[in-house]
Length: 390
Ligand code: NAD
Image (cartoon, rainbow, N blue to C red; front, side, top):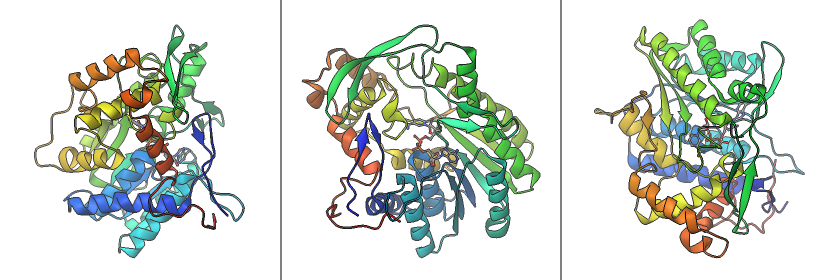
């Protein structure tokens, strides 16, 4: 089958297996070239097939030599239909890790379910013995609560009043005005917290601890985002912000609990990056396109793998970790939030339109990175060639 990108409304519906394989290998090569880190033993990564979770798995395996178990929820490819990018990324990672003599196992299924937690426990017991790094990196639109059987859907909405801002169609470069209506009920907020807050992270740690699989001085970490004031009404001050606050409170509770055994629970506030999720939040693609341009001009740009490389080398396993913020959070978004970066983005934000978006922002870079994330637009791949999506 010839696989070409199918994109509707800033969502890419398919992926290219070879392209995904190449971009996974590029991340592996990056970490290898940076050298060995004395750090994690075995690692469990929940949300391991894409974005920040995949980068973390690559750092644990290729930076620290760790055995890894990765959990993700992806659509497998079949002979007649391509699978999701994460499905191919995961297959590429497993193939590379096994070739390179690293212990690696994956489970494709719903991490929110009891069944997948039990499967993970059995796999850790069989193949890793225990884990001393647990990474929680799920981005999901819904969660079936195993305790109540209720399906919760998260919403990305402002609170109190509508959010109106510029946004961009990253394929055409058309800048337009977008309006998001506020959450109407407390239920919408509660549902978003149920999906993207810390409840399931806690259930994972409970299950691993009860099974005796958490190493004595284990580290667990989850990722958060704060961002600039233009996107605050839709992000940090909106429904998703409430979920992130819950995730951050969960980290504090978990940290107190794990400290007793010499362990720790951490939050890392990461930089805004092009991923499946960030491309569909109103206004965020335009902010990211402007941010990329400004950060590239200032020599400060980082993608997932550079962010997580810095997380491991400096913050998690460095001799002198940089200070955390007043809430105890690691700030990998420090460069994004520099006043000179934010001021320049704000200046451009005020004047950007469909005519000047190409010169003021890195819309081309956004598009290229989004396509690459799905295995497209990668040099050296002949996209006219037949591939077997299965
Ligand atoms: P992503 O969409 O690239 O990856 C999400 C992962 O979650 C995938 O591996 C997917 O398979 C997995 N997943 C989703 N639902 C699942 C389920 N039910 N069971 C098992 N696995 C499931 O996401 P990302 O952008 O890397 O985000 C990961 C975390 O980082 C999120 O908490 C997000 O808020 C945070 N973060 C993202 C950004 C950004 O700009 N992308 C910035 C800061 C923080």
